[in-house]
Image: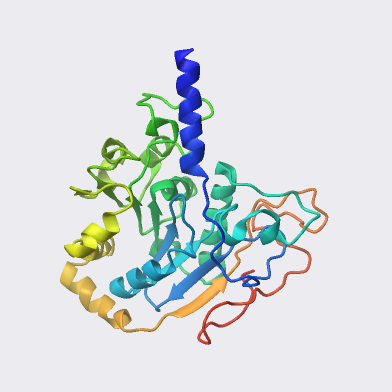
Length: 332
């Protein structure tokens, strides 16, 4: 009875932490989605480093745009954020606009398909070398980021680095300190991070009441020694206020700049000199819908190809809700 109650509580918390999107914050009619496509945006500063960001639970890219833009400007790097299936404008039939296709709901598999689609869009459409891409996952976003980092390592694809902010070992372990991964557990980052072959920088609040601090510590120990970077343990920080506290004492940006210099094999002064070229650049804001790779094979409008993301038979260019500086062209 105790084990059943425990697993039930753990699963309930896991589902709540894992999949609890906010109401849609985007202007209606902002995208012209066809089939299983996900909204995303790309801030292009012409930098030779690009962050691919995976957001946390109970938020989406619409709520976080101003923070992403500020981060991109302060660091002088390109920045891409994508939406999870079931969140924001990627929610069920409203996002699909296709009543003939099954309704999509949030799931671990769907999130992994989303990050793969975003990564392919950067490398195949934008032509950004994978070794210039930094995966950055916050909270729940540590799941798709660790998944993508492990996948790249297994396929021999080089990455610039991996940043994990308030990461979790796995969903069940948020509630219980299991020594192994139970059947049905998901976002088991602890089982993936040891295979990552890129510098790993972990940021975690010491007083985090949602994802305990020891999650970050355990993940750091599991990182292969050559890729282990000195972490940032933030005293007095919880789960959702790390950016606020680190912005007040101005520690976050210097720490990220130091990490970028390290992965580029530069001194901090050299990196600052190089990134200065991009700090004052107004980004080209591209709002896109990278095609998700999970279109059912039996869908008559969605021929599948394992080598590339599936796309509808008649792709349409998404309408951009961005400013006049945003060029409009299809993502695939």
